[in-house]
Length: 111
Length: 109
Image (tube, rainbow over all chains, first blue to last red; front, side):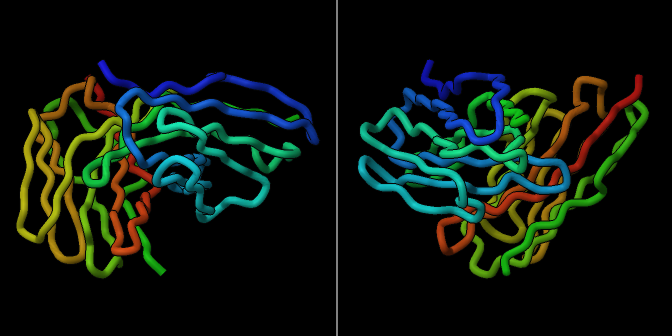
């Protein structure tokens, strides 16, 4: 079965370190997204991509970057982790129409 | 600004006690309204998509309805396994998805 996988599922890091969260999907979807989920907020869009070599900033993109070198992967990088980036991160993908399919999430703690 | 508001924030029901969750939105030119279920420690799981006012979708004990300003998720005779957080999201003309903060449902045996 096609799926979307995230790694690591849990990570603890220190302020100032670079962190990369991986996202891999096997649906061959062109559209991929990164969201963060925090108490009191809905899922908020960080970055998204509509295809290889395409990346776009979302609502809360400061301090984050993504790259899209193939259809299957959209890694999310925190250049210099901050405590405000402690959150649960979800990757999602979709076809050009229809619903978003989500991964299981990556819980990041920045100390 | 496009907004999605869900109510109530939390709901506790006795097993078998039917109720409804609300999702109101201010997006003009809605391209779709989506309902998801999210269990603790998991990613959101797709339930329904509604595209136009008057549309209804059903799945087991859940029924979703849509008007021009809001959507309802009706839960009939819920069971403890229906306990989860229910999220709604709207797909805007700008091709963005806006999520509500969810309703946390607890069904007590």
